[in-house]
Image (cartoon, rainbow, N blue to C red; front, side):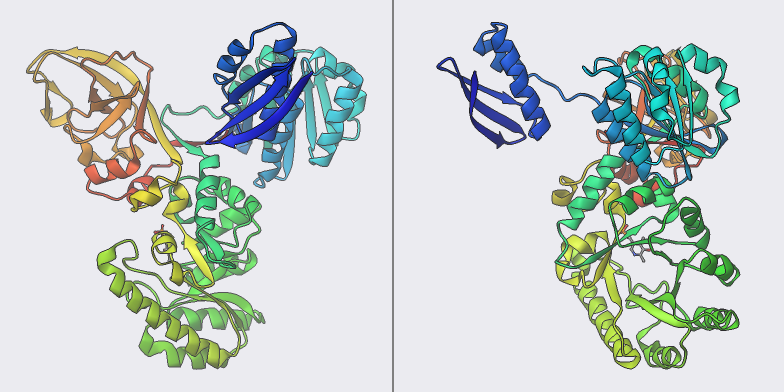
Length: 572
Ligand SMILES: *Cc1c(COP(=O)(O)O)cnc(C)c1O
């Protein structure tokens, strides 16, 4: 008998002390979750029973690695979304993957392609009855079972709207076109033996070899990091304008909705429409609504920002004509940014306009800081806040009801905690970027831009590389041409040695002028082969560093990555 004496988490590890046949057994594992602790103890029992010595057990336990579980979300053929988990199939990971599938609201239909589950230790009858029960709970519309065992148990799945079975992956491939995949989210879940990658090749859109990878766990982590900094009761609006700072639209919004943020904000009405069409039901503020979009705005229940008397009047007229009352709107005050908004001198007139009509419901009043990230502007930030609070108070008095007041963007959330007010607007921080070094350490990298080497050349000293013969080889050199250029959003300012990329973890400089679709790198001294992966930016080469070299800011680089660069979402 193994008697457990103590289980203690220490710095990301768990120390387990036990006693076995009067011998002390002490070991550590590099995990802290309960399931891993239980598994490790079970393992330890078996090893002791098999006569493995205690010393070896404690050495090996510490070398354990987490099982890689990576769910990828990609654009598929015929407007499908593909969740690819084609390397494992067991009940636990199936449940996790199904949760992720449920989180996807972009398509009404959900399909699961599942292989036989191997080595479950249960009888086939029990196993697949259990699987079928889970699938019914998770609203799967179509079920495709692949494998001899699952096919034998097809009766267990008869309550699912639609189910088909194939004995092997090869059989399924022959019938692929008869399955008519379109406009649905498809989860692929197969044990390695079934080679589901053959299926994912058929389902995924073929992609140009430059991709922007988006780590969804990192977004959740960053969201929670900022949430921990919020004063009690403060709401959170997530900024998903400009294709979520370049990271995607409904994919990010789905995640934020799943994590119960209070509000989303987009710049233009069509961005909001796209989110609604993809099943996003959170309230959405539109910062720059135009008159021609009022129809879709109201049809899709999007909430405009009113920033001038012009837009106030035109929207008021529109609502009156439609006989609509109490439509949610957001009043923007200009407290010093001088971009959009009512100024201090307008407040009185604004108040009388607001009290004279019942078409609006003031959902919130807000303003925007010009320099909340810089201590040099702290005094100005305080002045902006003062003007804002005074404006809010005037509006509250005259309208007689309360509304949400918000002014803090990412940097203000943390640098001016007292200005979080009723809600904050989290933008760039969600995507893992901040100007504060201490804060940066608490955030996780979200985006990685990757490309590949298309050709390698040996160039003699004195020869030139690229357009206008700007890049001159100072010695005999090895040059790699990679599949990214300024049309993809790789700034041309990084030409001629200013920019660098990483190959196998080694920094290599840009040589010559950056072209529209390609860039040349000086890889002399680095072992590289054609087809190798190249990191343009990511955890090891922060986008903020690249932005500085390009005389830009991360906001511009991220939102400038062109749409031909495919986004791949993953969850670990
Ligand atoms: C973009 C934007 C934000 C978010 O700013 P970050 O610096 O990315 O946090 C907040 N409010 C308004 C009005 C914005 O336009």
